[in-house]
Length: 360
Image (cartoon, rainbow, N blue to C red; front, side, top):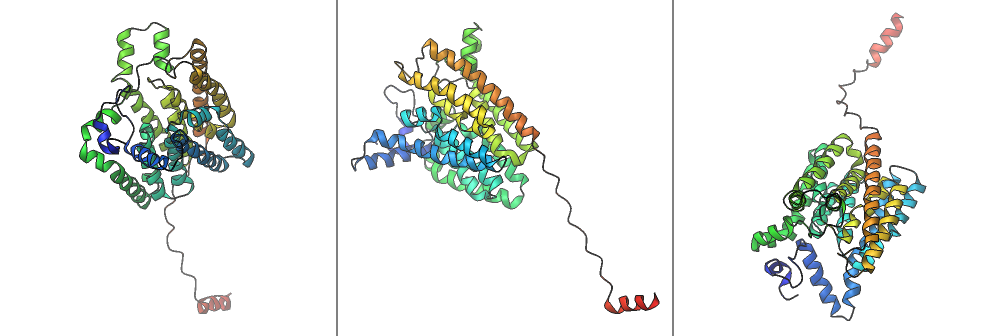
């Protein structure tokens, strides 16, 4: 890399508006570039992180579902993730790192509530937003559940999170903080009107000023709404945190005002956490959308067929979200912690017992 993983944020890139990846992605690219010097094709290397992440994501989804349903359902959902056409297209063909971020986000929730490993969960949560910033919407819910788990869990989770953030983000924050803020933290996505709210607003002829607003500063309101929804669900059902994370990431895609085929990754594994049929319906329909989209003349210029499939896929995603919220709320709430029992009554001494027997 010519500029390195830190100074890259200062550089205007030909054909791109900005370099908008979090710091860990830069170090990953640097490592892959070094490996390419050994003769390994860079095209293979760049697809490896997402493809490997999909393998581990299938295992994480299997574990999450197994603890909340039958073994058969867990196997079906895990296999569904591994065979998802959406993930095959976005990871195996495009090679984008969104799948890595989603895997770490789901793993953080699983480690926190299922494995009772808050330190590892904090590290996984920090890794998720260090690869792609999109899982930031689930970070408040993770911290809330860590807080509810007790002070030791919160301290361990916070320590793991803070240590990794300091290690990965610290050098960039100290060197080029303004460029990082503008390129990564405030990135609103491309201005293409291909998906979701922006697509429907354009289709129904809503005012241009409204569309421009929700594509610009207004998109932060949708991000806040997703984070708030995650916190609300996590507060009601903390034991269902992995499902909450899956639903929150799916909601972010539903409300996204940016358009890109790799964004379809955000809900692909999560909807299998909700249920097999929800995940299968989404993966099949949006997988076809992704495959046809990548076969077109450009991944950001969709044909009418792809646009129609995306519109139907948005509705399937909405239905899956409704199912996910219902599943979370239908789960049995955790009983309130019982106060510690008082001291047991002191047993009568043997002499007193004998005396009582004599009286009787």
